[in-house]
Length: 380
Image 1: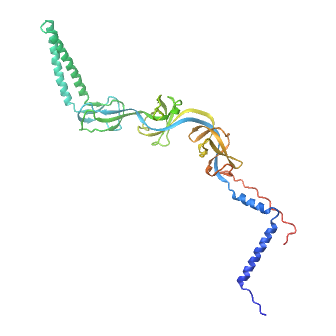
Image 2: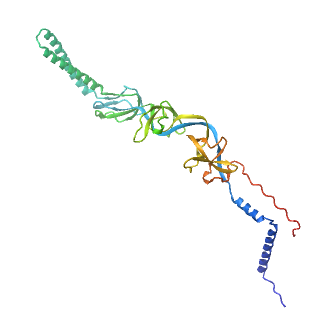
Image 3: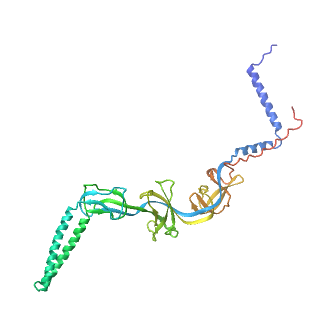
């Protein structure tokens, strides 16, 4: 009889099947009592990953109760300079940005017309003064009636009033600054014809600036004149300015439920009217308050505030009672102690009892269980 050799591929497949069967048998022999459960438990523990978080410690520091708001800086005094008479501007004496004093000449208008009117009134006044002097002599001689003398006197008083008005009109041809300050705008040029009551300059007193806040009525009892104020302006990032509460309106607006608080600041080269400002008024201070970063507060709290505290490698949700909120800090009145680690980053992935790994601290690895000793007399 003739024997045939199996093809090469069939011999390889059979060898692989035999090797797999041997490996399964050896594995079954090594698993002792309860080995399958231990392996399953180890697999589940391996699938549980600790959530990486950042923490900060609750500590004592000074916090202040404050009210914050925004406003636009306004000058303490402002004036629209108008022409009180008509005429051609012969000379404009100031420019925008120039500092002026109260009473300083700004524009000179053509004085010819009011000067002629003053001359006419002066002539009439001199004539009536002479007539009145003669009438007084004649009345003593009984050559003129007392009524005629009184009529001349009344006419003279009327002309004298016209004379003073003509003098005032002539003085209006020189436009002067009503207040001290800075020329903020100019709407006139030399040679322009100026109509009476036309605004030609705007002057602002920037030596003292004010910011007005509309504060909710619940803060009425806390706001007092003289309280310190801190201000930052968008035009000057990184700079802060100090001032005081200048005035507090004692009446609450019934429509908006707010009252006005006016804060005063020293002006100068940096602060200018019209700047947008962010203002903070401190009305109480606690020097030894227990605080945590404000970012540690949970956003999902409804009726009460809470934070996550890291204890024994797990996140524990702890309800707290808040006090003052001061910038990036939140005062904790109840619920925490100094040194407690509160979660500041990674809160969104946490649940009460979640395993956590604090970023920056060494990872705590579980101790590996000892392998069971090989059974004596195992087959080789």
